[in-house]
Length: 148
Image (tube, rainbow, N blue to C red; front, side):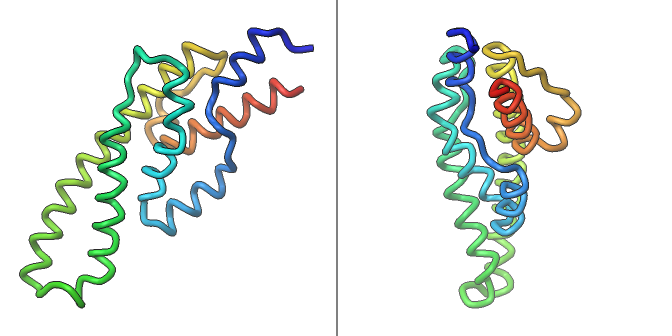
């Protein structure tokens, strides 16, 4: 039988989602699913602790820009000349570096939050290489263990 503290911890963790589906959606969407995943977990992360702040306003902007750059890259021949597209590509590269920095900042911040409020422990190397997929995997794994 679960204690109230275990039930409270379980209620505070992220929503459960199949990792294989997350990987497929990330590949199909060319990465902007990661932004959607972050924005879908906003309420869960904010309930964990308000001290370790995750910048969700930047995730809103980043997700919109990821979608815009995705469509600009797909339809570039219909919209831009070759020289005009070079400008878009330059902004896309600059923004991609910003997005990667934001992704890793957020993932390691989420790790701190989850580890401080639950019994889940993360491997930093796996977290670095598999970021949101590893976070979701460990949360799913913990939910299965607590259900037993």
